[in-house]
Length: 440
Ligand code: LLP
Image (cartoon, rainbow, N blue to C red; front, side, top):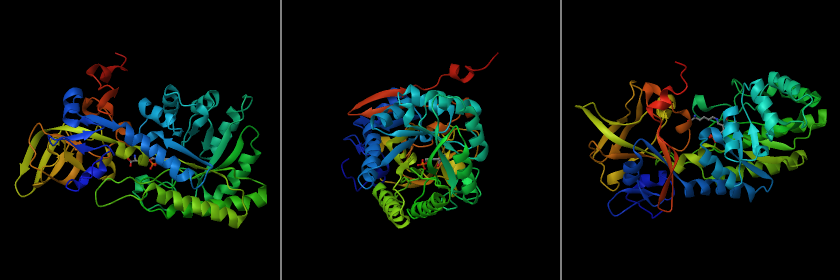
C-alpha cells in the first residue's frame, strides 16, 4: 500500500488498499465502486494477499521463537470454503466448534487431522462424526463430555486424542460477552476441579489425554493475560506431573489476539503476543523442569478481521436539526450485528470520494426494523448523498457467520480480490433461498 497520511483510516483496510486517480478506494487492484456496480451491495470484499500474509505472520512470529508451534485458524470467525482453503494452503490447522464447521473444513480439503474440535455442548452425533472423520483433537470441555466421548470411542479403530479445557481464572479485560477464561463461564472446567478432570481423563480407557487448552476471550488488547494464563496452567500441570504422572505434551492457549478497528486504538503487533507467550512458556518450563510442550494457538479475528471490507450503498439521509444526521445504507445488523450486540466500533470511508475532506459527523444506520440497527455511531465523513458507496473496514471476522435473514433480507455476496481480479466466492442469496427449507 502507498502511504497515505492524508487518509489515516486507510490503515484499517486490507494491506492492498489504496486510492486511484478518480479518488476511488481500491482493494487488491480492484476499484471498489466498480465492484459495487458489478456485484451489487451490500458486498463483502476479501483481500487474498492480506489474508495470506496474516496466516504467514502468525506462523513466522510464533514459529521463529518456538519451533514446535501449531497455528490453527479459528474458523468461527468466518468459515467460507474459500477462506478455509487459503488457511489450508498456508499450512494452518483449524479450530472448529460444530459438525457444520467440520463439514465445511472437509469440503475445503483440510486434512481432518489438522482439526481441533471445541464446544461446551457437543452432541453425541458430533462427537461420533469427529471420530469417524478422524478429527485430530477433541478439546473436552466438561466431565459429562468426557464420559460421553469415552463411551462413544469404545471399540473405535483409533483412540481419540484429547485436550482438557481448563478455565484458568484470568480476566482478559474485554467485553463481557467475549470473556471466557474466568471461573464463572459456561466454558471449560474450573481450575479448582482440574485435578479431578485430569484424574478422570487418565482413567478413561478409550481416550488419550495429550494436554490442556485454555481460551481467555476475544479482542484482548493487553498481552499480559496470556503469560498469566500460561503460568497458572503450567503450575497446575507440573503439580499433576508429580502427583499423577500426567505429562502435558500439548498446551493450547486459544485465540483472542486483538485487531485494530479504530484509528486511535492500535492492537499489539502479533510479534508482541508471540514474544510474551513464548518467553513465558520457555522460562516457566525451565523453572518447573518441564519438557516444553507443543504450543497451539487459535487466532480467528486477528487473521481475518482486516482482510475484508463491506461495501454498502447509501439511500435515505435523515436530518434531525441539532440532534443527528442518519445516513442509511442497504445492509446493517443482518450482515453485521457486532455494533448492536457488543457496541463494537468500526470505521468507514466514502469509497467513491475517498480523499474528500470530512465535513460532518453522521450516524450510519442499516435498513432493518430495529432502532438498534446502527452500524457506526458518530463518524466523521465528507458530505454524503444518496447513491454514494460506503466502505466499512475490518469486516472479515464475525460478520458473515453471524449474519441472519432478519426481515427476510438476503445475505450478501462475497468476493475475493487479487491482482486486479475479483472472483465471487459466495453468491448473493435470492428470494428462493429464503423459503428453501420450508415444508409447505
Ligand atoms: N478459540 C476458542 C476456543 C474460541 O472460543 C475463540 C472465539 C477463538 C479461539 C478465536 O478467538 P479470536 O482470535 O477470534 O478472538 N462474535 C464475537 C467474538 C466471539 C469469539 C468466540 N470465540 C465478536 O464479534 O467480537
